[in-house]
Length: 477
Ligand code: NAD
Image 1 (tube, protein in one colour):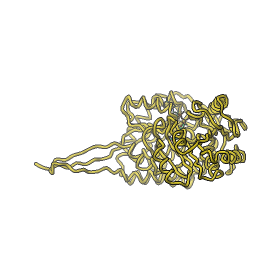
Image 2 (image 1 turned 90 degrees about the vertical axis):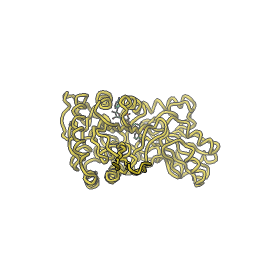
Image 3 (image 1 turned 90 degrees about the horizontal axis):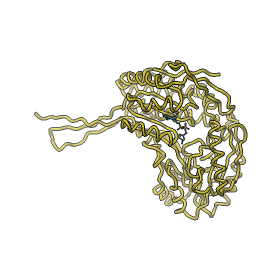
Image 4 (image 1 turned 135 degrees about the vertical axis):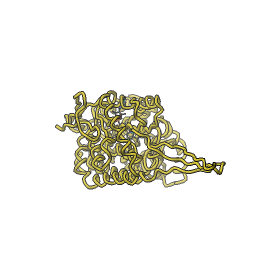
């Protein structure tokens, strides 16, 4: 059994209360680790440390911040598999392929963030008075509260923390209680790479009694949170009490449109890859698939075949599509959504059963009524809803039939229609010829509607983690 402390000013230690909590391994549902259970007292200490860390870190030259992040990237590139592979598999239920992807994406994110450290551009602008000069400077916010989710615990933490640090900020990280170990390992990596220890704090603990005091703390200067919309709403309401800048990356209910000109077999494979990756626990997963009626029957037949041939469960086999759900609550939620949809008139194309433990079969529901939770709420499990549509217009209307707006995909070779869909769909990203689950360290990832506030990736991130100041000079007498 692993024992882990929290990271205060870069040093691993017990919570001040001495309390701990248990982390279970999703595959076995047995205890994996005992972890320090931080609370408001530890948060106070971490915010104070981060304040002094901010003074040190923000005073460094951009090139020095770039160098530290590049060192972190090099370490992950050389040693990421030894350091993080087992943790990602055992703590977050990743398959080996998903864990490898996450490690290489983390390298990419760290290098991209490093580059942004030198690119905190602002501008000068003309002044009608020729004796006056105006310029804008971009300054770091200060101490950032970073609250991370369990589903891609290394990459998504890097995506927030890496860019925040690149812009000169200090961190107090509150990771998911499901995946604290990987976050502590990430904190140690930043210190090893040269970020001042005081600027790196990882306070492990539970959402309400650790995350709550963090987002309410009077001495934080910004919030970056990735997680569910319900949690984002609570955090957002607290952040607004102090008018804090906030980047909130929240839930999704993404649509994949399959138009009649696309090959049904290829579309089925793309749809399956876009949903079943990591057992459907991906914010951009295409949990709603809208298929033009002309190819609907063939698409469904191909999808059933694809699902029933997928290798599921063994996380260390590179051919495995996905492993367990994160915990029993997630499994019960999936079952409840499925039962409600079936009772309301949906039919089961394939799946619907628990294979073993927390491993759920690839499941496809046909014609889920639009009032059902499986259609309108995030299930975050390997359950896909497939609906036939008469034409392009109906596909777009149904794609927009959601409070969320994170991402979408359109499968067609008719790029005119594809581009029309891009313009008509209310989502933060739309991909033609691809499923909605796409990543790129430079892209502005974020959502419309209930999928969040702000954008993350490349300079869009550093813009979120800095603020602008207008400075002007009187040059005359
Ligand atoms: P979650 O909302 O349950 O938890 C997210 C984090 O918030 C955790 O660290 C948790 O401890 C913390 N938290 C919970 N209650 C809190 C409170 N009252 N105050 C402060 N912090 C609190 O999310 P999760 O289950 O870990 O992750 C899955 C969710 O994340 C899904 O909804 C998914 O769509 C979303 N997600 C979004 C993106 C994106 O880029 N938009 C990416 C990945 C995941």
